[in-house]
Amino acid sequence: MSASAASGFVTDLDGLRERRSVHLGYSEWVEMTQEQVNAFADLTGDHNPIHIDPEHARTTPFGGTIAHGLLSLSVVAPVTQRLQVTDAATAINYGTEKVRFPAPLRVGDHWRGAAEVTEVTEVKGGLQARINATVEVRDQERPAAVAEFLIRFYA
Image (cartoon, rainbow, N blue to C red; front, side, top):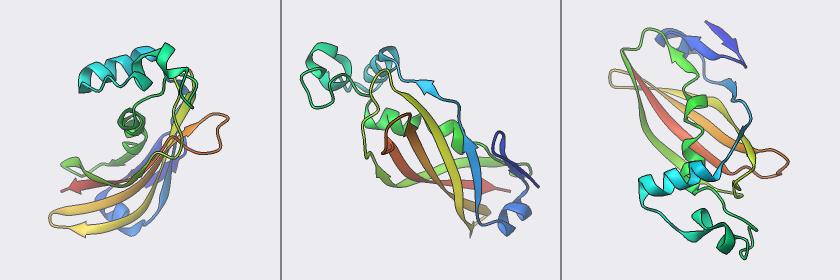
């Protein structure tokens, strides 16, 4: 078993079973761009002007366009995948709980993901890890997204 803030946490099923918490580290700081927001809008069909119309968005309390909440949530996926279980035949995203969007992720903001395993439980055929994930925004007190992901590792 080894742990590193830069690379995440690599273990096997037995090691994960013994370990109930581990910080998986942080992603790099990345800028949220209007192009990313527009592509997400096209992909999902959510063309709310708060996301895609900079002129309209300037008249809102946000002062400009913001990322969709679900886009803010989805960008944290790579940091949750820093938990590597070497002898698991497969890993699946079983679900997400307690999702909150405490603050906006504005176009032009720099964000990073952070994640921590907070619980490991037995499930039929494997283990389930509860991972608390956060999308932090540089120079912003509150995060853009906070959620608990349930990741299942099957033998």
